[in-house]
Image 1 (cartoon, helix red, strand yellow):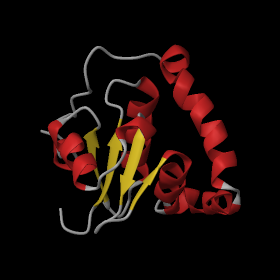
Image 2: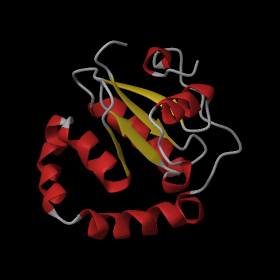
Image 3: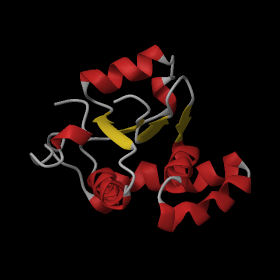
Image 4: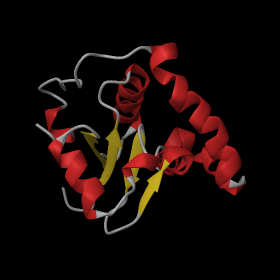
Length: 134
């Protein structure tokens, strides 16, 4: 777990679950670990960092130590770590409020557009080691 980067995601959101599967597929260096925002682990990590729960509902990226990112910054920081998608870091030069404007539109409509599960996803036995809330 040491030096692993943690992605907290909405465990009932189909878009978020597909994003996690995409990240796992492209995480060739095995640097990410995952937990749902709804899990005890996710809640504890949010509380430890004094993250305002009213400002997050879909993704939090935690770098080792105390650094964390939310919304579009989280998505782009994650993309930086995926070799084929590291070019997306150029969007970090755009103003955060502009990036988050578009991010918030997707986040607000994600259940309507992509659907929602009744419960958080359960990782397959092969992927279980990548999840903190087993």
